[in-house]
Length: 221
Image (tube, rainbow, N blue to C red; front, side, top):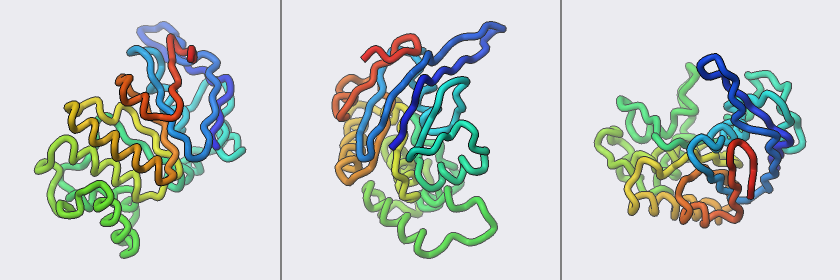
């Protein structure tokens, strides 16, 4: 489904070139749940960003459904992200002046056309899926941290994405709330969603079918 071959990425810091990823190769099968672990600075988030096309690699090949994405123009990548990819982060990135429902609909609110009624209905169904149907018209400031993260997950689900990329989705939450989020992700995986998740929690990584360990930009396990 998604294949990375010999991916390398460098950043320039204080005038020095730093290799963050070094010829990383991996394959994600459809319906798979894979976790990425490693120490801080090992390249976990950079790898996730490359896989989700948010960052272009310096070298290597990234293929999705057999298509090489290296030379694809940004507007076509945006179309791909909108259709098939969804990303959630450690911090939910909700807009405080929009309601829960409006934040869920945000991927469809970037044009002058009103959001279609069928999409609104799907957004409400996604909020119900994450247990927030009764809070659709509240502002994010009136929700707990765990509830805000669930809104971010609903926002990802409303796109009907095929792959969910999650970067430390429980990192800013307490243990009990984090476990609720992981239960939700596990349920979504059982429903057929492909998931790639970066986490620093070994217990959460163990919920995935496969764990990929990075060390200094290299896959060691």
